[in-house]
Image (cartoon, rainbow, N blue to C red; front, side, top):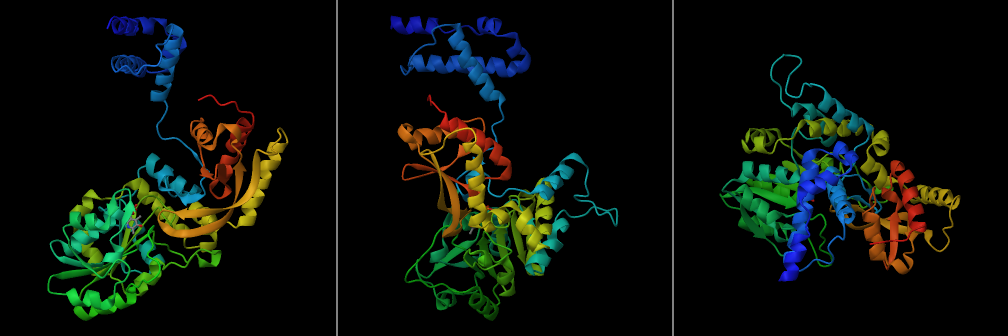
Length: 470
Ligand SMILES: *Cc1c(COP(=O)(O)O)cnc(C)c1O
């Protein structure tokens, strides 16, 4: 007990600490940040003393000041920071999904720094609709009659279901009641939308007659969901959009498809699996199609809803729409990215998601070779870093079992161990996020940007000369 008191008595007083702080520190950081960081640091140690979890009390004011400075710095540094994506997962949800190219970034600049005609019709001088900025382009690219964009695809699904099926039945296959991750579950979203879910078929097989058998006066919608990051393989069958549309037409019931990633182009010429494009689904006669803006499309976070004019009109009039509204930055960059698609050749270069997905492995091998050559100019790399083939992933729930041929820098962790080093790379001023496979550390070159290379070289030099302290 006495020992506890003596420890608590050794906690410094905030005023004393403030007096002892270097004048530079007081000039450099806001007062609020300095005081709060000092108080929080002392409180944390007080708690550790009381909980008996303290390792060692700082021995002198110098040691204390080290802790305070660390806390001040941490509070002062922006939480969102740039990282280098060495995982080879192109659409990495945890690392921010799709990146924007220079044109899209410049449109963000305009939307942020200038007044714009966001909701102002320059022809009439009257109030305009923000959706009109992108509707025509989306229709051009998808062949749809009408379109609207909302905050993300989850919102798109919610809004469409709420508009078409509030308190009414929606028929969906049991094989498509998936959880996408990040708490998006089809059954839960349906419930939140107010729709009544009617499940049909079995997990692996659903037939057209399964839908037909449960159609009744209460049926408002036939729903098809892309299973994204989940695959049923083996003895399976599901109903095509074309067949579902024929059934819907027969009973005068609309058909909706949540495409999830929803690509505007067919990636199979670049060796990726054939997925139905939005254009093909619209052509099949599906009445409403929803998809993400920041997955295979390569734009900002958004949910795009395309379809028949009357249905999209009803969706536009739903008051819930206001709460799920897309903001001006998203609209600005989305328009810019969509415009790139008018010239596909150019889009493959200017939309980072598209260029990363379609980059051939020879180019990546060359990129790796260049990095190693530059490293060799100043250090020896033998036995520590090698250029080896690997496979990248699309990510974002798209084409889950497909690996794309790629090349990687493979680091030998030596006696430090891969998991210690993985942490060390994460804590660098520019964190490097990489993959561990069989105790080797893989930096997949597919997701290394041109602008990352200078930093990557510094990091690799540090790695080669390291002495890690944890
Ligand atoms: C990713 C996905 C969603 C959610 O889209 P967000 O844009 O992340 O909200 C919904 N449905 C499917 C099938 C998906 O793959």
